[in-house]
Image (tube, rainbow, N blue to C red; front, side):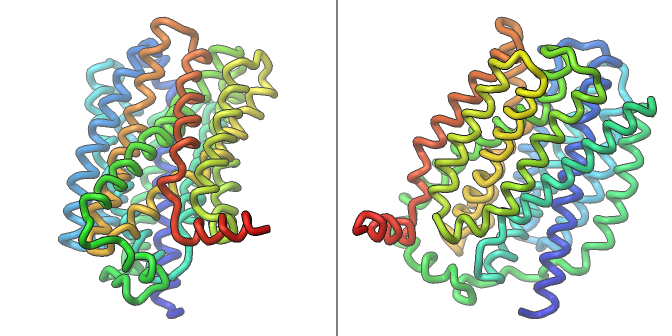
Length: 400
């Protein structure tokens, strides 16, 4: 393994941490921004739809630019733009200006998400072994850092704009410093151990491959809608439903992000042992149990347990879907990742609006029943990730 590949992996980690910190900084400031602008949960949910719309547009733009210009140009540019745009939601005092800020922030975040995940697939191909979950773990590290900073700034009485500007300034530096280490070209499938599986991607049956990609995308939508709900509503759940103070409520998201980090750090090894299908199935089932606890529990400590299980269960799901899309057809890896990531991040960034709309008719915690259903559907559909290795493993198990 050469030094340039190691450097590319470290740089990719830096961008994932940056993206997680930027998004987490927005998340932990949601209660303060909602209160300052003077909007309801339902209105906030509608505004989050604009965040998702901007992200979706940014993903389509970034996917094409990454294929045409290369990740070395697009990823750092997106990182700088996302860091600059972070401060925008912290400035408005009227709903319409917040709407414009969220649209712009979503666009920049979408550009960064797709470009860095596309580059991560290239790094995984070059390594020749599962590393995608580890990258997503570092995204969760960023969320934990943001929760800690958010709790500290809330206790100190700092404004959202001030904390967002500080994080954004540091983000610009990180994005620029890490740029040179990115891979200049896309590794070919023939150079990696993934090639054997890729060769079996039926070039003569591309319609079947496209159908599988869209199923992966649908599962990504459901899983990332659940993740987005935790991002945008976990702190508000503890504050409004259970009556926790703002400094305590911020740690609901921190707990979720921490268990996401732990799960993703372990997931690559578990995938190598049990297969990606098992990780998706059992992870989604665990998440369903966790969010059910959140829904029915009247105690703060039990809610923390529920958010912890929810994060642990979801932790390994998205990386498996992204990785499967990237390796499904080497000739269209970038496009496939963009489809799965694009639809998935629509769920993550815009999907929480559904929770906001549901608060018109039910309490916030009761709206989380939708998340239980989505996790159950994902667990049932996990067979889409079944590979030759999974079939061999199942045959060996049954023979005993």
